[in-house]
Image (cartoon, rainbow, N blue to C red; front, side, top):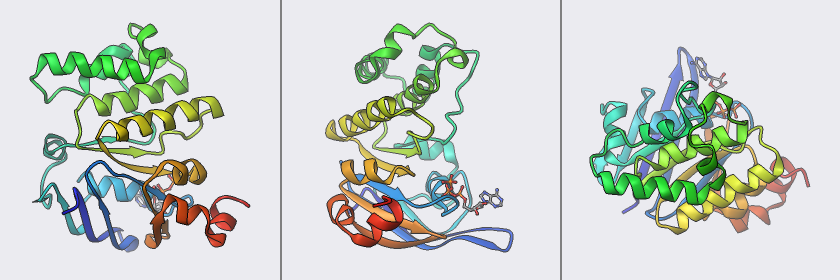
Amino acid sequence: MPLLDVQNLEVRYGKAVVLERVSLQVAACELVGVIGSNGAGKTTLLRAISRVLASTGTVRFDGKDLAGMPAYKVVAEGICHCPEGRHLFQELTAEKNLRLGAYLRADRGGIESDLERVFGLFPALRERRSQQAGTLSGGEQQMVAVGRALMGKPKLLVLDEPSVGLALRLKATIFNAIDDIRRAGTAVLLVEQDALSTLRIADRVYVLERGHIVREGTGRELLDDSDIQRFYLGV
Ligand code: ATP
């Protein structure tokens, strides 16, 4: 049984159908990517899975139907969503922002060791833990956003375009961290415009076009596919 099982998801904004019969699965410990061009519906898909947005179809997680479940309960079930645009508390320090990710947890020891884990993944944040989030660089803010989602101790980490707008070196830092997170046993659903980096690290990838899943395969299969190379890798 997959950890996340999405069947026939549909989202409309007014009369516009933004997602149509979208089905996807993520297994435990799997890193699944979703690539697609601007406006394909990637953010909408993640928001519907996290129940921030109403949809039809079914979303089952860890054997439970998430229909009608409010977003905060979805977090308690083990889905932590790192949204596009980071949404940090600008006046709070980096560390306070990270600790807010653990707001539903009571295991103090676990919280401290997960904070250490985040600093291990992103050493730059250890040095800047007392700095106001709003004064961090874009890359550092992105690290805080990913780290904050990890502090929720997710079974499934949902990441919306974590590398957008970052310089190459910082992109590599973020993708390496995502790879480490998966290797440590957390399933990841990663939406990205950087198709090449995503195909390289993901176990499986779905291609979303105008609200439909049009392809699915392993990262390797899609990297070798001439249509994918032409449309998404600019080869
Ligand atoms: P990008 O890569 O540019 O972030 P995306 O693949 O994440 O794009 P979405 O943000 O999911 O795409 O948007 C999908 C479509 O839904 C777009 O055409 C967008 O304009 C539309 N849309 C998104 N939010 C709303 C809204 N609140 N009201 C109306 N239309 C919306």
